[in-house]
Length: 249
Image (tube, rainbow, N blue to C red; front, side, top):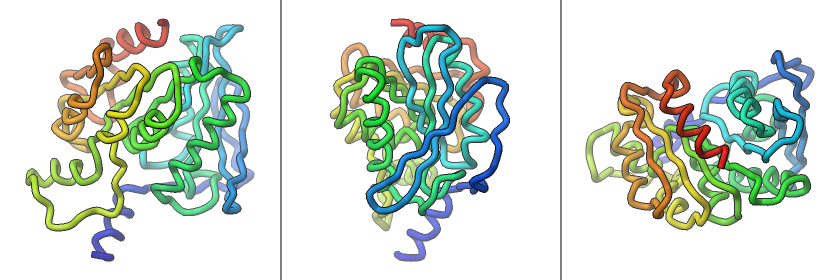
C-alpha cells in the first residue's frame, strides 16, 4: 500500500523547482507575490493586471500538475484581455514555493491566497479557475467560500474515479490516500459553475469528468469540446466563445 501511494504521488505531482532569483520571461507586466504559511513555508505567485484600465475582477488560477509558473503564467493573456486581473500561485514544491506537495496543505494554501485577494476584491469579483489537478483545489474553495463563479478545465471526478477510468474497472483493489474529491465539493458549491472537457482527453478520460455532471445545478454548464484533448482546448473557438460569455456577465 505504501509503495502504491508513493507511485501515485510521483505520477500526480510533477513539479519543476526554480531558483529564488529566477527571472520570469513574459511580454506583459507582472509582479511576484509571496505568502508565508503558519507551518513556516513560503509560497510564490504571479499577478498580471487586466489589459483594460479598470479590472472587472480577478481570476484566481490553479494550474495543472506539471512544471511551474514559467509555463502557467502565460495563461494570463486570455483573461487579462477580457478585463480581469490574473493571479496564479505555484503549489508547495513547485517553482519558487517551498515545501513538499500535499493535498490538505494545497487546500489550506489556496485559502491563504483567496484571503489575500479579499483584501482587494469583493468575493463577487473573484473567479475561481481550476485546470486539471487545479480543479481539485478550486472546487475545495468553491465548496466553502463565495465567489463570482468557478470554471474547471479538464477536471476529474476524484482520484479513485480517475484511476478507475484509466483502468476501465469500477472496483479498485485499493483506496488511494489522495482524494481530491471534486464530485463532493462540486455538490456543495453555490456559485455558477462552468466545466470544459475534451472528448479525446487521454490524461483525464472523458468518463471521469462526465461524472461531475450529476453535481451541477440549474444554470451550470458542462461543455464538451469535440476533438479536444488535455492540452489544446484553447485552440478551439467554442472554448473562447463560451468563456467570454461567462466572464462578461
